[in-house]
Amino acid sequence: MSHALNQVNTADTISPSSPAAQPEAEFQSTGDISGPEPEAITLARRKIRSESMSEQLSERLAHMKLPQPERLFGPDEGEIIDLDDLDGDDGDAGVAPDAWDKIKLDDEVPESVRTGRMTHSRNASRVDSASISRPPPILEASEQPEKAKPVEAAREQKITPFDVAGEVDAAGKDLGINYDKITAQFGASKISSELLERFEKVTGQRPHPLLRRGTFFSHRDLNTILDRYEQGKPFYLYTGRGPSSDSMHLGHLIPFMFTAWLQRVFNVPLVIQITDDEKYLLERDIKKQAETMKKIKGKKPIDLLRHYQRMATDNIKDIIACGFLLEKTYIFQDTQAMGGTFYQNVVLFAKTVTLNQSKNVFGFGDSDNIGMYHFAAIQACPSFSNSFPQIFGDRTDIPCLIPCAIDQDPYFLLTRDAADKLGYQKPCLVHSKFLPALQGAGTKMSASNENTAIFMTDDAKKIHKKIRSHAFSGGRATQEEHKRLGGDPDVDIAYQYLSFFEDSDEVMEGLARDYRAGTLSTVEMKDTCIKKLQEVVAEFQKNRAEVTDETVKQFQDATRTIDPSPRKTA
Ligand code: TRP
Image (tube, rainbow, N blue to C red; front, side, top):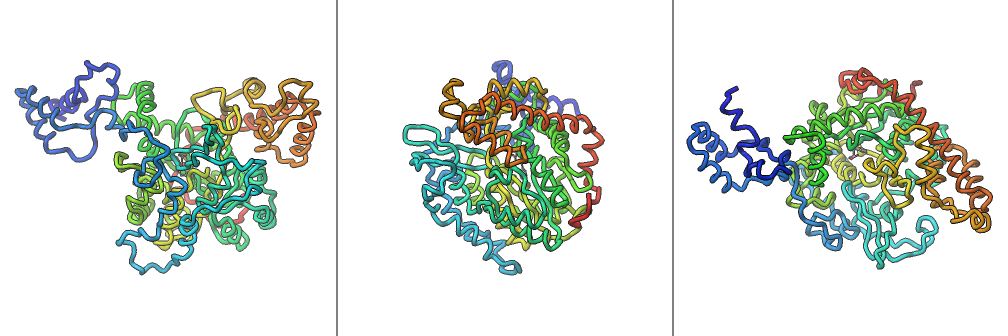
């Protein structure tokens, strides 16, 4: 192409301020804005080509109010979110508990889809929105999770896919997440012991420790899935991950291990969405983004997008190592796989959601980019079976079960409503709690802090060291005191991590009993946990070593047909 045009295209020429003047921001400086070219820029380009009016050009550019460099990458997040300002008229702060009753999904159906020609029943969907519209029920103290004293929360918790903040008391003390409250607020149901019994009866499988011990604690329509399994009717599993760091830790992979287990129990197809697009669009932390750009020596937005695409590929290998059945699993990366009937569904979905709903449900504001608003459609549509013609042909009547963390629920609340409007099946869900970091309940595993989590690349020695020196202990300060007063397994991280994997209830109960009695020491508890984690991680690493680029290709092959029929031997 024309040399002159290329020159004009370089970031330096079009940047509002000379990069030389701000070496810090050099990597951010770019003129590569995608989308239609404003007429003023076209004019400017012509001018510069004539190479006679560069002075005038910079004048003009200065008057064009071009976005500041960071705004080319994402929304301006200069504003600080005021948690107290949850009055609902400013979407920035996410769904405040009492703002949920303002979200009336059904009342806001865009005219275009309010045709009444759909054959579906809207009633079921009302159940959801109705339970949201009601003020959250006041929970009796006895219903509060774990021996919680009924503490007054001075600041309510806030849960959206982008912000998770627990309750805070009047003194500013973190009270953590109240899961019973979320379930009630979201209009979901707690997983009861009756439901677990039914699960066991129908599948002939003992529920996974993560189900039995309440990490997966809440659901929507799990009974529907069990009905179908009982009747031999097809359904599938859907889950996903936003690629966010090169090295995945136990917290990232536990949900996938659980999903792999579910897939084996049900022997059904599974689709896994890798949302590289989401990570690009929704990175609201400008500082973090700038750091990433610096690290990858990125110059243009597309360099950042490519970074997330690369991470997606790495993450897929780790995910595969969790043990999915190749012949029943399709893994796809959004920026590569979007098209066909999947995109068709994205279009259908997008028309069912108004800007207001998206603002209310996700807490977006007017300065958020339009991709964020639209992304809900991308995460929603794998819930519809005809998005995957290689598995389900054009059938739209096959529901899915989505295992996900509770913060992802708002996406699927919209999806369930849209499913009704579109005459599709509503997705069913099982929700998990957030997994605590080594430092204890209420702390977060962080990919950038080595000592907060067990990474899947850690060797046996490292696991030993991390648990021994960083796992929060429910034991007493001295051995003597521990023997006399006993420890608290409920807050003990070693005990908790062990409970994710140890299948035997007897073993767990024994450990808890002896710990409380003071006859089992902290070191003994930790060493039991270490042994288990070493096994789990070693098995993962063995699987991971066998995952080649070729394996990844096979899992990602959209042309590979998958047999959707249930209950065939693997
Ligand atoms: N948004 C999720 C994340 O950030 C990724 C995701 C996409 C997902 N589709 C999903 C998670 C379905 C659970 C279920 O990690």
